[in-house]
Length: 112
Image 1: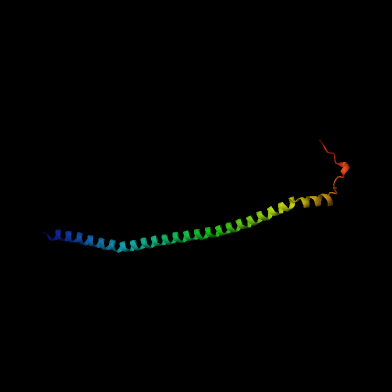
Image 2 (image 1 turned 90 degrees about the vertical axis):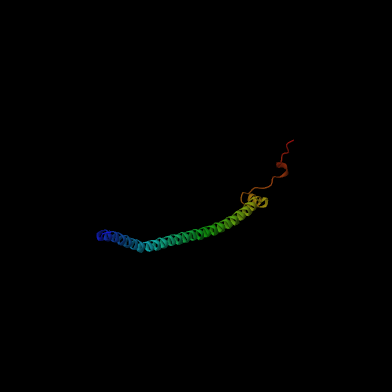
């Protein structure tokens, strides 16, 4: 083998080693950066999902409170409607405010 050929092979090997060292120096940095990005993305996704869960919990609590309030209002309105429909109240309004009186016996006509 000639010295020039040996130098050519040697320089090719040296260049290959230098490239592998350079790329191997970048590779761990790339892996570390990719790992950090993946961990960061997973953490952000986890925090976002927890935020959504907490937000939905507050909405559920608010809806339950509103439902309880509406049920109480509905119950109160039912009692109020029953009291407004009572015959004693209607009779009192007819006698006091409207001035109505019960008919006398001679004013009642029986239809056969």
